[in-house]
Length: 628
Image (cartoon, rainbow, N blue to C red; front, side, top):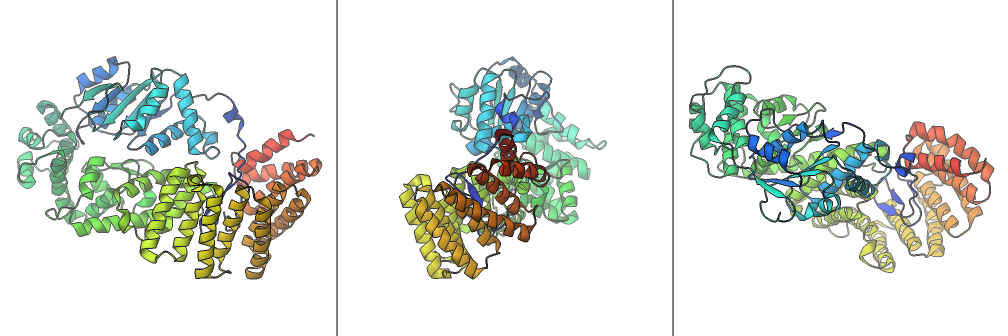
């Protein structure tokens, strides 16, 4: 959506194209018929990632999962195979349970996103209609009312993040949790502590992986597995190397060096041996692995990867360091990521300078991948794929070093979170944008003021509306002083100031400000400019709130005609203004005109925006409610 986006009322959301602010006011969301009836889970709904091509042992643990009726918490070291066991067992339940749903649960936000994704999978028509918070609630309601389902909550770091879910759904289906945390689960579930593989199983895993492509010399596999602590992840990486390079285990032991210590050190040493070899055959492999370490572990989308990376990815996959998926995305074990992110001057692949370069590359990739036209539903699918990796990067990266590449994406990311019904998460993102911009550019820089304005749009709950008016007025005053009264960013700040006046119930003052703003926009950018026309549509909404319906209709009619000339009759801005105008005519008593406009609009909206877009649904409901 362009700079002329507008919204009116308390809960609406609009974002300016240049500046990326979110304006909150009335947002009317018409729900499709599916949202009004009971949720129906389609048969065979399975979402479980492929975690291990080679799986050995764990028979006793699988039997315990079969026998246990309640929640089971699989605990153990990183790389010990908790997720692989859970995935293997979950897939075996697909013929008797529905849905079988996997949620990466490293934070409460991850849990909420996973539940929302479950609701969306049950009712795809709601994906771009309901915010994440509402989808999450629908999933919880369904789970608490049905039996026979299975949830896997992977890598829970804080039991408090899943207690609410377990309390609401307890006893109806099955829940399996994986976690490195072994305590704090009392009263929550049966704890299954997963040890490293027994010696024989570790050797079997090594042999299967090493001989996957053909016979190999496996003499000395027992000693190698013992040296690696029989940790499945380290054994698999070493075996993939030996199989790929026809290296006997005894030779690999010599390359491995001293006996490793803990699990992370075992993985670090196996990674070093593999990357030493790849540095000669494909130098980009190490660089790419360091980049991947800054994102979420599961399904890193192709748009975050550098061009020409497929060969290096193939080498990493062949050495069991990443998993490739059919859609072009990549998964990496989180322990591999943790090791690769940790600088070590003794390791040529983890020198601090190389880690810093990867950090910067990840920041740049995220900045380039985040669409700026956030209100456009066509970009929401991109954001859904990006958000786990944005959130992971924000957890891993020190905000004291946020650079320009990331800062440019933070306001759009926060805008998407607002549109998803997550204002608290958006507040943290906007806050980080303000802090980073103040550090890089200073408190009076245009981008700092822009980020501050975005922060204010989601901070209304922090104080009274009068306090919010005062804070927005301070930003608007600073922009006027720094940028000048006629700067477009200042003019947008004035739009926000008018909006918060209206939210505080000061409709007359909001109208006065909007009328003055329209006059200045006509003078600065012209009467036919999209910013002017967007402000006019906003003014029409305020006129209607003040019961000045005739003026609202006249103002919106003018804007619709001009938007049609500027963007065409099928332009998104034109269509949304026409939807508002039809509603205003219905309020003004011109039901026949409104009905005719709705009939004309509906097929165009379906074609341009899709049948599930809120504007399309609003018109569809209007047709049903207006008398023939």
